Length: 171
Image 1 (cartoon, rainbow, N blue to C red):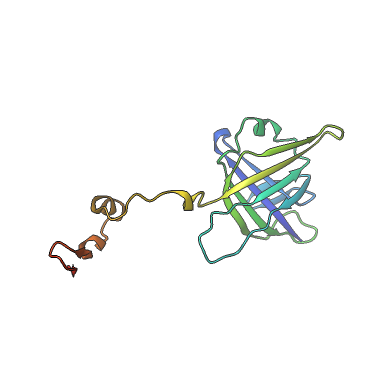
Image 2 (cartoon, rainbow, N blue to C red):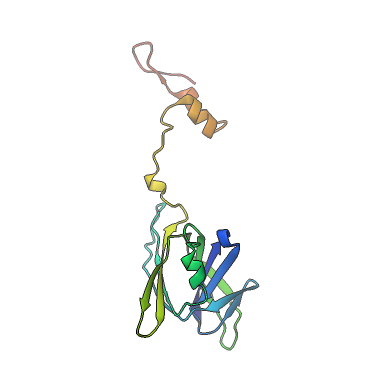
């Protein structure tokens, strides 16, 4: 059977939180993934051939064991891995797993049903590249900045020299 494994590294709390969509605890690579009530939803992930900074949203219900950690804002910017794992029938050890998503957590959104006492948690993530497409690049054609960031790159030695009134290339 195929299950989802969710691992969040809460560095501020020096703890790693692991959940699985399986109805019982699963072991993978020597680590125990706790059965997490219901894994309600994982948003769609678009496969493209471009570097993408899109994240996903994971919805969990029945999670009460980490309520105190969530209240401490420990999830903010915590690394998160979402894996798809294969568990052979009658076993609780995942034989193989592949990464579905890797990134960083945003602050979880909690939805509390006061009548039933159940908690639903929505964890939005950022891509492992974070906001790569929103960070300005100030390097431009500044020789000093380019040399400092790309040691050994000879790009600036081959740029156009326009001081003679026409473009000539130096090599």
